[in-house]
Image (cartoon, rainbow, N blue to C red; front, top):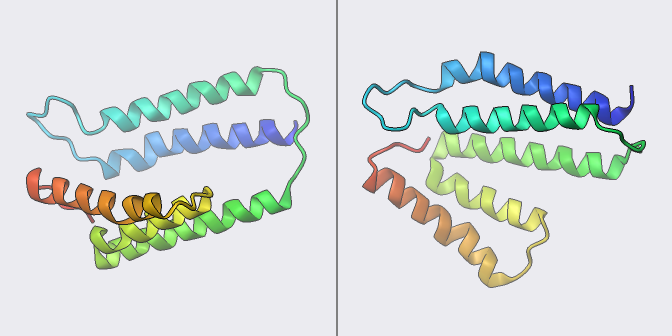
Length: 139
């Protein structure tokens, strides 16, 4: 089995674990909702699983191990986990701008007006909309 196929199998198993083990305990059921809260995550997970199965059985060229890319992915994962921890402890309005700025810098965005909009205006707008207009609590 090539490295790419092994990664695809791990992705499929991870998505199935997410769907059957993690998701039922994390999503509340609401009786009178027009759209059940589990709808979008369920559709997203099944799209990922179906795409991964197609990728698993399609022909491929060999994938080489790239340690630099793996290191960047690990640093990004650590950054996301740290940002989520900050959001959990101090609130969405403090953690989301840090996460947004980090993601934007990580993908190579350097234009100052986009960095400003993406790390301040958009997270604060989301917070205002969800917490004040929709009356839902963000972490």
